[in-house]
Length: 358
Image 1 (cartoon, rainbow, N blue to C red):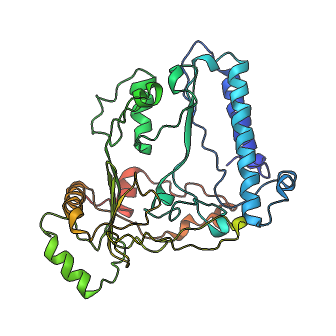
Image 2: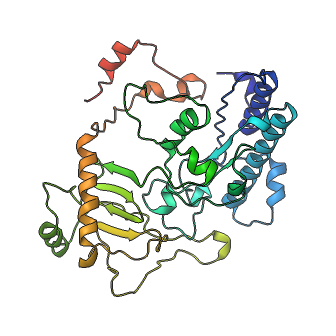
Image 3: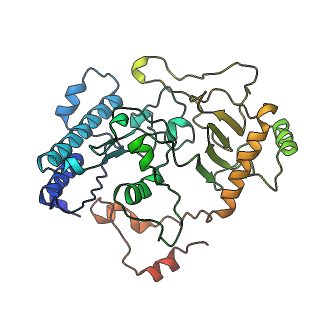
């Protein structure tokens, strides 16, 4: 730990270190800089003079989040200015990406009008903003919005194969991601049509009404499809299938400043299933807010079966999930309040302590 930086706001510190790295770098040589800001993650903290800039926002969490977002924007601008000052910007691809949707409540996030939040498989939990800025982009894609399908695992092969001119083909194991550089830089269609969202066999099974149990027993071949009680999700083309316990945040949360409160949006069309269900099918292109569950509509049952088979195939290929037991020696209080590595053992010893299940 660099205790000399205690009390320095991390986003400011990270920005300064990034600027130093850029200024010291030989512009004739390639550079990859990964800048993992903590903003706008909880805990919600910002210097007071930034908080004062948003005193018109009544909700304290939202005010803190706005201040943190401003500091983040400020950091991105300062890094960009340094790249331009050193003459590196003209040959730079600048990527801004996040990992998941916002967390509401005490974390201040909001995904309205999308459903759900961080840790959910609803669109509000899995969609995240991002942009790419570079003089190397084709003119016709600059300033446009790309709605093609992309997963965060795509960034690695996109950067290595698409931008840096390297090759991931020689890697010992296949990648989950695909090269999306042509999609980003030239506006081509996505190199993927499918995303596995999750398969969590350790999540507690939800209760299911007898009538629903009988329906899915009769309509899903359990030898070919995934158990519908398992919490899982998949996106294939315009279609999205969710199964299991995905209903804990099955609500729409408008921003606190709207005064609207929690919403239970419903599409009352006859083809939409109105009750809660452990199997949910949505057409995300026409229904991005996930208001119309089509899973119980016989017209779409073939799609449910197809996507459930895909989930079963992914599950059969997956390494079993493993959560090691809590280790009290990891407590930051034992190391001055900082999260740091706490085991000095070699890898062989560690695998005996925390065996990896194959």
